[in-house]
Image 1: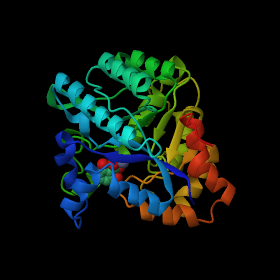
Image 2: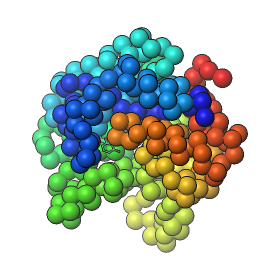
Image 3: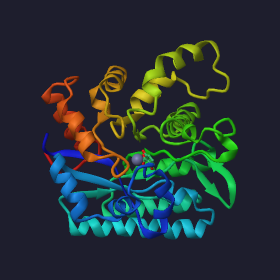
Image 4: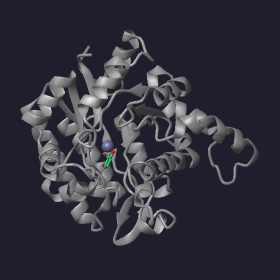
Length: 327
Ligand code: GRE
Ligand code: ZN
């Protein structure tokens, strides 16, 4: 399918590149991977051309700004990442948009940077790599706490989506995973970490306090669609500190979109479609951690959806979600 829009597509700047090499894959050619994640010109555009991806909304790699302990450095690094993405959009205005990287260490600074990126640079929202560390290594701040309500109000006022992207949990959060490191990483830990963060947002009353938030998660919903019925069913008997006023599923279905990033598989896709509906699912690849070719080969050919639905999920939902000036 031509004209796809993809939006879990990562770039990097020299300040944040080293940390991603561990995740390039055991068999990966690190030099090639590094070139791919840093490149915003010929190589990436060629992959996009070859796979029918017309537009990519770029984001800074994980954990990126969220693992920087010093707040001033986090603010500076987010700015550098955002300037690099803005420059890429200037060079290729028909091929790229961007999500702001945000220094969540300081919610007021994060709000200000998001506002600058949206209003001055035309960015389409934010992509944040999970919890933030701050000041000390063993710290993990989740954004459901009251200190972030004003930040969320800014996101809502700007009327842009917030992409909650995975990162790895800290060793102190992962004591039962350390002896089998794959459990901490992308096969499982990323999903658990991000899914839990998304559920924290739902369970904190956030969507009652700030009514118009749109949150995006990748990997076909980080396991949540598969377990949504059960969570609501169990919570009826045992809400234990759940602070939502309505069932979890209501908030998830009303406030979340999910993307196909890194999850190119029919039965997972069918489950997400059945639980959330086709208006809530969007194509994405997760380049360069995944191959655009794998994403497109699956998406362009899956018979789980009709061609009309393919156009909607591959393109039109994104145009609406990000109010893109395209048909
Ligand atoms: C991602 O961006 O989703 C990602 C990483 C590292 C490894 C795997 C992966 O950042 O999917
Ligand atoms: Zn990703």
